[in-house]
Length: 215
Image (cartoon, rainbow, N blue to C red; front, side, top):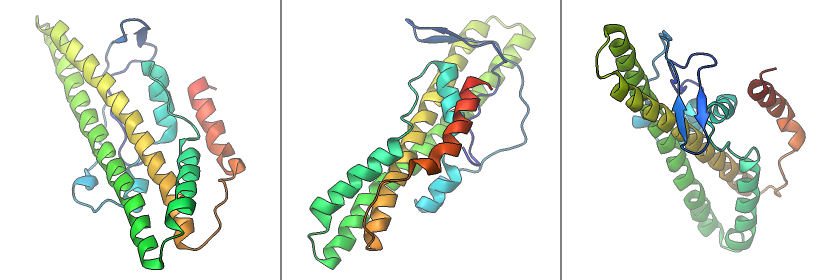
């Protein structure tokens, strides 16, 4: 996340193994010191697109996490799909209304998805912190040789998987908010809707491909 990255601390390079049937993750841990602690601004600030821009997951990180944990990656064109669907709904259901009704309808379209996106980012950040704490407990137990290491490793792995899944969900909710926001914004400005130009996404797609492909 921009300013709110998932803390999958403790993943050693090349240590992730996947079991396609059991959906489990086996990994070893190493300390990854960090001095960055994100303050959960979503607990204080009013949900808005500006806030989403501040706390949303980094798309390249999301793709990498999905790859590492064997999770279904998010649709690369999710924002575009939601944008188009929202524009179609506005044209059919909102534009025939009076001006005052249009304004209310557009607010009712955008506000819930913004709230859902901010809440999803908060859940992802909270699970990231719990995952980091569980990894720290495991490291301590491994260093002290306690008999409870197996149980702590199971808990740590589960929390890391949960953190990865919630990160992807947060990304999807934010992309949905971006899509709705674009269509709503064009309607508010009285602009004729047109599809998002794919050429503007080419740089992001190239970067994402390099991250996942390791090149």
